[in-house]
Length: 192
Image 1 (cartoon, helix red, strand yellow):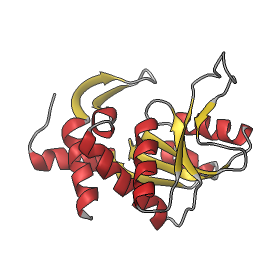
Image 2 (cartoon, helix red, strand yellow):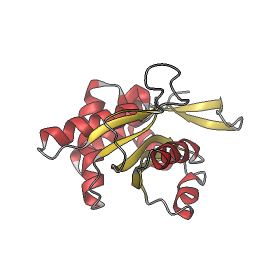
Image 3 (cartoon, helix red, strand yellow):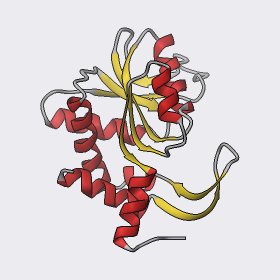
Image 4 (tube, one colour):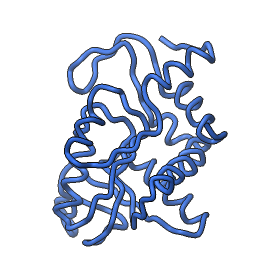
């Protein structure tokens, strides 16, 4: 594991992974909760996320024009990767998919740097069922974009990744919930 990858793992474990009794959006109960935004919107998290996310896209040999996903969880990932790609001199632009079509202006569902025909990587902060990634992919497909794959920051290991892959979507995951749990246990800073 490279230094940036390990630093981002530790930041996620410290800032975003919480043990306790939580009700999830699905209605299910869990003994842990992951709120990636407390890491992905952190200044150091942005730098680490840009480096690690861009490296994962490059290592997978994907050549997207843009990265983005369903607002709000995907936004900081997309922005960090876009900024890092610019610094490296090979820009990948960012876009956001609204949860519903805008009712004024141009009435767009996708905002930012997206054009029909764009090759994109859909990003997701936490993959649980894969539902948010599917919604983003559907919006991209309807707007005549080409989804190259999915990049997930954390996989809750509850079947979402497998569901996405069964649908033919190449899915790359940077960390699993087990990785975060282990990092937190190693650091001895479990929060309840």
